Length: 140
Ligand code: UDP
Ligand code: MG
Image (cartoon, rainbow, N blue to C red):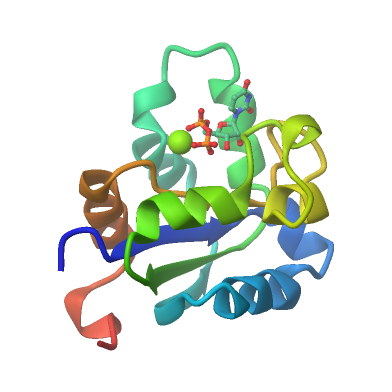
């Protein structure tokens, strides 16, 4: 199963814009199968743990307050080469440089409020999936 799942979150600003349905549609039309899905309000502790790798970066505090500013949708996506293919569908971190046809080009507001998250490696996909979902919440 290594290599065929990734983890995504639809971030609070995309939720506020009402873009969740359109983002899930783009995900499915790109050939990903949604094998787990939930809406959730992240606590400050959750967000600090999820983004711990960025704790010394200047944008960390802003990122944590943004990610806790409203609910997110968390999902696990299945497809061959899921991590790399989903990063392509997502577009660059800064939406100013994101290609046409990507989720961030279509729905991001700025580099912080960039519509959605995508895992950056198979290891992190597994860690992030386990952070948000119990085994029995994943339908394969
Ligand atoms: N971020 C930010 N400012 C930056 C870089 C990143 O606010 O200069 C936020 C943004 O929401 C991004 C998240 O921190 O999605 C995690 O950063 P990372 O470099 O891992 O980008 P990603 O993997 O999400 O493209
Ligand atoms: Mg990242």
